[in-house]
Length: 235
Ligand SMILES: NC(=O)c1ccc[n+]([C@@H]2O[C@H](COP(=O)([O-])OP(=O)(O)OC[C@H]3O[C@@H](n4cnc5c(N)ncnc54)[C@H](OP(=O)(O)O)[C@@H]3O)[C@@H](O)[C@H]2O)c1
Image (cartoon, rainbow, N blue to C red):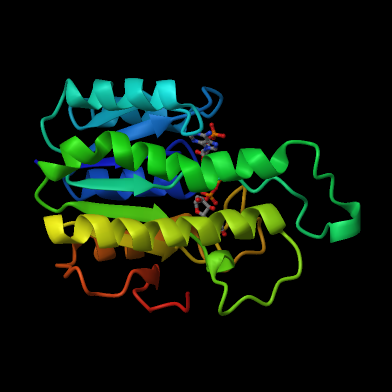
């Protein structure tokens, strides 16, 4: 049975990815940050053997190590890592002059969105090396594109996703020769807590597209930065 680890799995896109990969027959290791959202534990009885919930704060190296240890005790190989956990902490309309740059949101956003995936990737690397797909999916955003940028605010979020995109390129350069494929995926504007009610698509639609991308046969030289439908984006 194929295995996938999904961070930030208790709501939004992460929860939809958990559902879709379970239905597709994967053993899903689901990273649970806060205990306050019941959906993931409620899903557990329907998938007693193929859903494993793992405590994880991607901003905390100790919990990352513990989560990887937890997975390693249950499987000798991880086929896919999906770095989905993310935060958007600044009010989207706040202009530069009104931003509080001392309230910690800049560092926290980078710690979760940009550095969290690197922590997980480093610690899962031995298990991924044993996997059949060697696939690393970083959930990025079109907000991380420098070339197509039209925004004039949302500094922390956009900068964190641009850094995540650079991480994907660096990792592809490093891990590609070992048979890995790294993708930075824009999941679309989704109706989640982060995306809001006015967004274009449901997280189920985005997760369906991402599952299709995950099941493709990838070459190291294929494009890295894609939307959930597989269209190449501008770095
Ligand atoms: N929504 C959009 O329109 C949109 C567009 C482009 C890209 N994205 C990206 O898509 C991904 C999922 O977004 P979403 O809309 O599903 O967001 P969401 O509904 O806000 O869910 C975020 C998830 O990340 C988890 N999380 C937050 N901090 C964490 C930490 N320190 N460690 C581990 N998990 C943590 C949350 O856990 P708790 O529930 O415990 O807080 C939650 O499960 C994010 O990377 C986001 O940047 C979203």
